Image 1: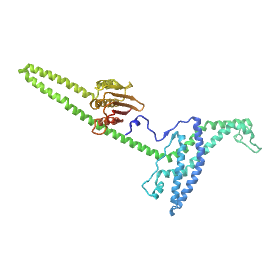
Image 2: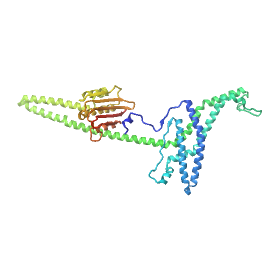
Image 3: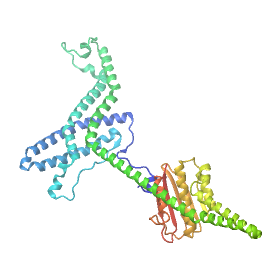
Image 4: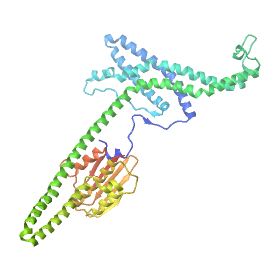
Length: 439
C-alpha cells in the first residue's frame, strides 16, 4: 500500500516527461539525432559484427565465450548512449532497463550471465542492424536539408557554376528556358518545396530510427513495467477488498454488540415493566402509574441510544448537508473542546465523505474515552490528489493501528476506500492521526 506522502504527491512514471520542444528546436534535435546516428551506426555495426562473428567462430575452443561476453557489454554501452539520444526525440527520459544478475553464481557464471539475458541480446541485435534505419534516415535528412539550403540560396552563388557548351542543368533538361533568371526562379521553387516539407520529413526520419531503437532497447522493459504495475494494482485491489470485508464485519459485530448491550436490554426491561404495570392497575393504580412513568423514561433513553447508533450507520446531516456540516455537528457533541478547520468545498463522492466522517467520529470517540486530552484539533483539507484528514490531541498517547486495538477497524475502513491511515502517538506525547483518501 502507498504511504500518506505518496497519496498527496504524484507518482513517478516509468518514462519521466521532459520539457516539450518548440517547432524549430525539435527540428534541430531531430536533425542532429539523425546526423550523429549515422556515424555511430557505422561504428556499431563494425564493432558488433566483427566481435560477434569472431566470438562465434572461436567458441568451439572456448576463446570465443569471453569475446561474446565482451561484445554484449559493448552493445550494452552503445544501447545506453542510444537511450539517452532518443529521449529528446520522444520528449521523455527513458529509464535504464533491467539486466539479469546472478549474485549467487560463481565467477564463471557471473561472467557468462549476459549471454543468458534477453535484453543483452536485444542490445546486440540493435547494434548489428541499426545501420539500416540510420542510413535511410540519413539519406532523407541530408537530401532535404541540401535541397532547402541550395534552392533558397542558389541565386547568390549559382552564377559561379561552370556552364560549358555541352553542359545542361536541371531546368534545361526539363524543357525550361536556360536564362539565368529562369534558373533562379526554378531553384527557388525547389528550395521552397524542400523547406516547406523539411520539418515533417526530418521528423519522420528521426522517428523511424528512434522507434527502431525504442522497440529493441526499451520495449521489453516497458512491458515489464506495465506487468509490474498491473500486478501492483491487482494486489492493492485485493487488499482493499479484504479491508472492506474486514471493516464491514467489524462494523456489524460492533453494531450487534451495541444493540445487544443497549437498546435490546432496555426493550426487555420495558416489556417487563409494562407487564407489571398491567397487573398493578387492578390492585395498586399509583404503583402502576409510577411503573408507566419509568417505562416512558426507558423509552426515551432507548430512542436516544438508537439515534446514537444510527449516526454510526449513515448520519442524515452528512447525506443532506455535506461533510462540513456533519463535522461541525460532530465537534459540537464531543465532550472535549474541538478546534475544527474544515473549509467548505463542493460535494465529494459519498464513499469519500462517509469515510472522512467516520475517521473524525471514531477519533473523537477515542479521544473522549481514552486520551485524557484537554483539546483536540481536527483539520480536513482538499488537495489535488485527495482529501487529507488530521486529528491531533494533547492526551496520553499510546494509540496503535495493530490488530486488537480500537483503530484497527478504522484502518480497514480507510484502506477499503483506497486510502492510507497513519498514527503518530508516542506515550505521553499526544496522538496525531492522519488519513489520506483519494478522490
